[in-house]
Every structure is written in C-alpha cells, then in structure tokens.
Length: 192
Image (cartoon, rainbow, N blue to C red; front, side, top):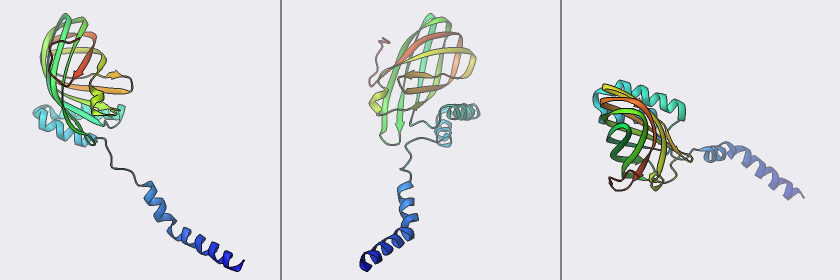
C-alpha cells in the first residue's frame, strides 16, 4: 500500500512538473498554409508595379473580409462585351502546401455591359482543398467602370471555395453582368 502511494505521488509530481511542456507541445500550431496580407502585397508589387498602393488597399480589404487565403493566382486576362461578353486569362496558382500550377480561365457573361479591357489579375483563393479543385466553374456577378484604367474586386464562388479576383485593367468598359469563370489546366477557346 505504501509503495502504491509513493508511485502515485511520484507520478503526480512528474505530471505537475512537466505539464506546461506537454501542453505547449500539444498546442503548437502546425505550419501555416495560408498567405498573409503582407506576403500577398509583396508578390503583387512584383507583378503589378506602379499600382501597388491601390493593390495593397484592395488586398487588405479582401483579407479583412474573408481572412487569409490558402492560395492565389497571378496572371493576365482580356475581356470584351456588348450585352454578351467573353473573358479569357491565364496565370499561375500558388499554394504553400501543394506548390505551383498553371491555370487558364474563360467564361461568358450577359448583362448591361459594353466595352473591352485588358488587365493584370491577382485572385485570392479561399478554402481550396486541393489544387485540382480549382478546375471548375465559379459563378459571378461583376460590375465594371473603366475609362482608360481602373482597379476592381469581384467575388466568385463554387460550394465552399471562394475566388476573389483583384483586377488592374486598361480599356473602356461600363456595365454590370452575370456569368461564370471556368478554370482549366489547358488553354481553350470554348468558354462553355
């Protein structure tokens, strides 16, 4: 009986002495797989160049609304519309835990929309479970007002995945439309 009491007392003292270290080891966060606003702004500066102040504000707005994304796409796109429109683009998808992947996107739109634009695009991607999950259609409602140049933000979704394009464009375009973007691993002219 005395021996059992001694063992329990020793075990209790050991647990008390090492409990903070054990708790600290259990509460350590795994390496983050999201991108901070600072990381996104640095990458955007490299790509966008002179529109960096507007980009920084746009990224901070998006991150404050949806949090830190677990992926982002940097690329370029062109679009045009007269009631019916088309958009085509290509770029690289970056993730921390699955590397890089080339992506293409295209999509139709319809609405009170006329004009054309070319833009550099950074898309923040949320809740992406795997890089292949980007290859699907994302519904959108978009409004554009470009008179020579502009910066715009749109949110697209498909299930739990959210894609937020931040576009810095040049062109002449005015209107609002609805449609979708379809991401593909290969370039295609077919927006459907």
